[in-house]
Length: 124
Ligand code: HEM
Image (tube, rainbow, N blue to C red; front, side, top):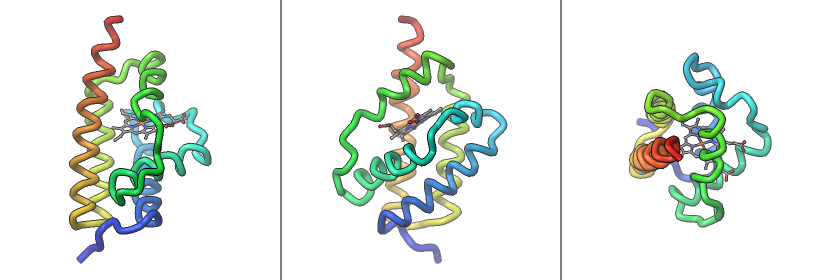
């Protein structure tokens, strides 16, 4: 039986697992090649700590940076499908329980909203 996501260290483990898959992925790794990981990892861990551990430390708007990414390379449905598949796989490989399920549900709903926002901004 796997454990649930219970603390910041668990989220760090999940994010490390997820980005190692992203970086090895043929389809979407190029979208992440310019990231400053030392800067980005604590930010994304804050983001998930806010959602999963109910500790509101991420104060920014997560959509904003994606508009910039989307301007350089339009974020098509295919990219979101790869992103979400790798995220769900990473959660399932490491964790199970209420927060693990919440992580997957929220990732899917945020990815859907993000895709909608990105795709409607292409036309502008
Ligand atoms: C194809 C899908 C996606 C791509 C290509 C993508 C790519 C990126 C990139 C390039 C950054 C900028 C990192 C930096 O330079 O600092 C970023 C930041 C971020 N992404 Fe994504 N992302 C995707 C989907 C998502 C989804 C679905 C979520 C949420 C569930 C998410 C959450 C975040 C957060 C929280 C940040 C940090 C924003 C900040 O600096 O405040 N991303 N993403």
